[in-house]
Length: 199
Image (cartoon, rainbow, N blue to C red; front, top):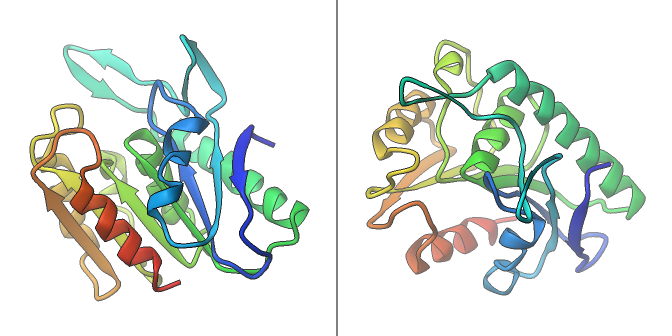
């Protein structure tokens, strides 16, 4: 199982799974706990140690200035995360709904988990985007999904996120933008909290 930080509210409470971004670690998003509704929280740590206390879920290669991500590797890691979620919830005898989400690289990975059909009760995708290879796939949105992004994001351009969001339009899916860079501002965190309160 992947390394993790956890908070257990109760066996019946909803569980939020958060996946950190590239170069961060499991402690990063755990800091959101005080801003969220009372719920179980587990923050898994990516398996690739890139030094200086930072970890990555998958490689990011650079070619002629363009960011290249191997969608096959993302799918493989997504399966590893799903296995850890299942093992962790069984180990702690948790029976409430599971909401899966993450920031940046963790959001892309969460989108891969959604694409793979993991039966979470909802998804929170913060500052991520749909990989080009996924655009022709059939996306079936059957649970609530919130995607957030900063209009001034210079790491993952807003247009990348917005163009992918257009392919996911449904009554259960919402895309929200904020005047922020590659981070989470107060309004975004408030919207995430409000989204999580429905579970």
